[in-house]
Each structure stands twice: as structure tokens, then as C-alpha cells.
Image (cartoon, rainbow, N blue to C red; front, side, top):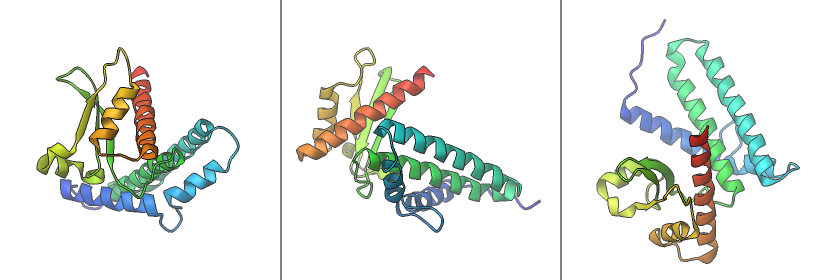
Length: 194
């Protein structure tokens, strides 16, 4: 058995950056996220059915990748992590592209539980992407935070607050970010219900 490699925070960031780049642009046997999206968009069914089909296939691929690379023992752990991150990141980027997002224009959007407010918080930044921790540490004012009361759920005013906070003035782009944030919030709440 080989020597156990300690994965530092810098090494993990390197793995994430590599995986993100490969997920967006593609690599050898993997199409880019945009190419994969076109493949699924050309299939029959609604957008939701196409996305569900993609998720099922990519989760199987990630599970298979994890099984195959773990046959080699603990030494293959970094390769295993990298391949699974890449598959999952590509899936997320593909879904974003299928929903109309420009995946080459990197920004950060998430929904987290704000323990202090005791409610979900949508956080977004046009500066962050993969390095949102740097933005939070150095320029926290560039992160837009929109709390969402779970008793009313995501509403249009939440989306407008988000779009205006990000400085998005183009009406079509505003509509895209609002729709994307609304869908992300829906996924967040559905995951909590499981």
C-alpha cells in the first residue's frame, strides 16, 4: 500500500480549480458542459425531464468512477475526488446552461441556512465563482445577501433585490438570474423535505 497523502486546503483548491476548468471546457473523453447540454436538449421530453435524465446518468457515472478508482486503494483518493468533482461540476454547469445561464461568465450563487436569522439566505456575487472565500475575506461588500422567509418562500421581490444588488441592468439577464435563483431555492427546499 502506498503512502497516505494529506490533502491540504491549497491542494483541495487546486483540485477544485482543475475540476471546474475541465467541467466547463471538457477533457479527452468528457464533452464540455455546453456540448453535454446540447446532447440532452436534443432528446425528447420537457426541460425538467431532460435535466432529470442528465442527473441520473451523471450520478451513475460519478458512482462508477468512485468504485473503479477505489479499487486501487487509498493511493487513488485524489484522482477519485478529482473525477467525482469534475463529473458533478459538469452536471451543475450543464444544468445551468440548459436553463439559459452563460456558464463562461462565472459568478457565485448559493442558498444556505443563516442560523442567526433562522431562515434560508441567498448569497450571490459577480466576483466569486470558485474563489468566493477570497471575496468574503477581502471584499465582503461584493456579496449580495437576500434572506427568504420560509413561510412565504421565494418571491419576485427577492429576485429583483438579488439582480439589482448584483448590478444587473439588462432585463433579459435580470429575468435569467431571478429564474435561476428561484429554481435553486426550490431545489434547496425540496432537499430539506427529504
